[in-house]
Picture 1 (cartoon, rainbow, N blue to C red):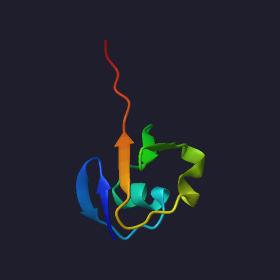
Picture 2: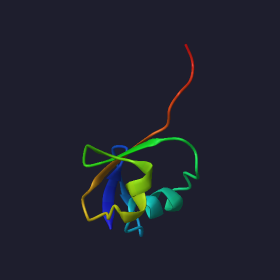
Picture 3: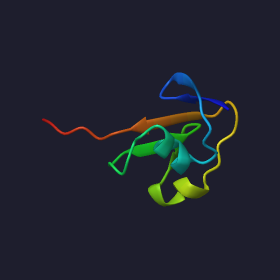
Length: 65
């Protein structure tokens, strides 16, 4: 299916947000996720289903000062 990930159109096989993160090799690292501009907490990613045309944002925290 085609979805937008961080502003870029991608063709993916994943059907859940958790599967998408694995497919894109994000690993366990700390990051925030949003589906169609709605925050998705880590514990809900496995049951958060994706559909054609969805927009996903994946943001990793940065340290510095």
